[in-house]
Each structure stands twice: as structure tokens, then as C-alpha cells.
Length: 353
Ligand SMILES: NC(=O)c1ccc[n+]([C@@H]2O[C@H](COP(=O)([O-])OP(=O)(O)OC[C@H]3O[C@@H](n4cnc5c(N)ncnc54)[C@H](OP(=O)(O)O)[C@@H]3O)[C@@H](O)[C@H]2O)c1
Image (tube, rainbow, N blue to C red):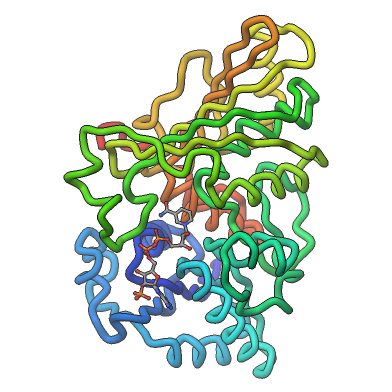
């Protein structure tokens, strides 16, 4: 009989944590031990997430002290951090220090930006705040599971949602030397990409039935994407990224355009993408343009491509909360605990969200 793996979640009442709790509820091995809430310790999880009441009817959010106590008593725990950047590094550092002192082992997948950088300076110049745990940066690898065969560190930093869609589209082009290393990327995200806290620019009346760009050519995730491309295939890439707010709650659509190194037709590029992702269980390469609704609430990424002369456009859709955060993190944690990478993640998209 397989035993369950104790699981801790940080950043408890946020959207990504909610999605993690949903996925963990159906997972064959990871079992929730406790979920930390900074703002609502003691409150029922079902108050924050009524849609999860059937799975977590009596479960209450725990304080940081309770989570730290768990980590000192569990010989091996899976820790997912869905806390915001800045807060995540301090929480994780405290937890790992307690585990080390107690002689236990906690393996972390962090979904914030805190451990995506290889240097403190790069993080601090982009996020304009001091890094809370610079000594731990070397303990994390930032990559997509599709682009890294063997994990050499104890912990993982998830690259993020826009980065996941962009990297899935861009890395094959560069790794296979199909395209020049100057990418023009347009991304459209749903409103859950902005998190639970309502602010003016992400408020439903402003976002619904509308489409607009923001932070054009100045988005702070670009250096993170560039670092992931470098790590995945050694290419130094220039990325001109224009993110957009889409009038839907979940999902991301990314279009990556580039100049081909030689003229190819669409069939050639599609065949190259298919071959590149032949062993990637969550990536599907389609003939037709991929649609957000076909992947929403699933861990799948749908890709397609069109080539005309020396121009290529690769299209990618994912769910920002699933493949772009909680699902991608669970995919990594499966690997880190020696489970099949697909465990608990193969449910198809519902289709009519
Ligand atoms: N939304 C996405 O599509 C997406 C995709 C990829 C990555 N991410 C990353 O995943 C993380 C969570 O994103 P989200 O969209 O779920 O954000 P969110 O809805 O704003 O949730 C973050 C949660 O973290 C907790 N928190 C806030 N401040 C904290 C602090 N100072 N110390 C400890 N905990 C604090 C809060 O929950 P409690 O008060 O209950 O602890 C909050 O609800 C972020 O780092 C984000 O950048 C998000």
C-alpha cells in the first residue's frame, strides 16, 4: 500500500493556494497536513474557498508557528509556497532552518519570484527590495519540467505563468536554432493572474468585456524568462514582451513571433515542435490555433505554429493557475518525490468554463 506524503501549503487564502488545495484533494499521494494563512489562522478553509468545502469541510488555516512545528516533526514533507514575492523567501527560509535544526527534510516548490534569480543583485534591481534569504538562492532551480531532465538542487522556483507559456513556445525555436534570438511576445492573461486582492486596475467592471495592454516592453518578468531560456538552451535572447489584460478569469494566450534562420513552412515548424515535446506529457501540438478554453482548469499546454517565409508565430495557451502555477508546481513535486510526473494532473479541461 502506498503511503501518503505530508504536504504543507503557504500563502493559504490566495488564488494559487486554492488551486493547489483543489489539486492536492485529488492527488493519489500528497495529503494536506496543514495550510498556512497569515491573515486568517483558525478560520475554516471553506470560508475562503467555498468550492473546496467537500474536500476540506473541517480543515482550518494554520499559523506560521503551527506549520513550523509540523516541519520539525515530519521526516519528509512537500512544501508548496504560494505566498507573494518578498514574503515567500522569509517564510521558506524560516521553515527550512527549523527543518535543518530538527534533522528533518522539507522539499519546496516556490511559485513566487523570490528564488527565480541566480543572483541577489538581479532580484533586487528588478524588484527593488532586499532579498530575504540570499543564502538560499543556490538551493533552488528555476525551470519548467519540460526543459530540464535532471534536477540538481533540493528545491524548485516555478518560473511563473506568463513565463511558462512563453518558454514553452520559445525554447524549441531557440534550442533547435530555428529562429533568431529576438522574440516579439504578446501575452493575454485572465484576471486571476493578478491574485485575490482587488485593486483598481484588476477590478471586474474595468476588466470584463475589455482588452488592453499594460507594462508594454517593461514587464518585470522578462529577465526571468531570459534567464530560463539561457538555462534551458544556452541562448541569450532579446524578448520584447507586451502583456494584456483579458476579459476572462482563468487562462493565458501567448503569441511568440520571431525571424526564422531559414525559410520554412508551417508543417516543418509543427513537426519540430512535436518532436521537441514528444516526451512531454502535458504539451500538445495542434494544427489549428489553440484556444484558452480547451486548457482552462487543466495542466495541459496547447501549442501551434504558423510560418510564412522567414517569419514564425508560435501560439501557446495554458491555465495560469494550473500549468502556470499550482499544476506546474505539483508536476515538479511529483518528480522530486519519485512519483510519475503526471500523478494527480491528467484530468482534462472541463471545456465550458
Ligand atoms: N495568480 C497567478 O496566476 C500566478 C501564476 C504564477 C505565479 N503566481 C505567484 O504565486 C503567488 C501567489 O499568487 P496568487 O495569485 O495566489 O496571489 P494572492 O491571491 O494575492 O494570494 C497570495 C496570498 O499570500 C498570503 N500573503 C500575503 N501577504 C503575505 C505576507 N506578508 N506573508 C505571508 N503570506 C502573505 C495571503 O494569504 P494568507 O493571508 O491567507 O496567508 C494571500 O492571499 C505569488 O507569488 C504570485 O506571483 C501567481
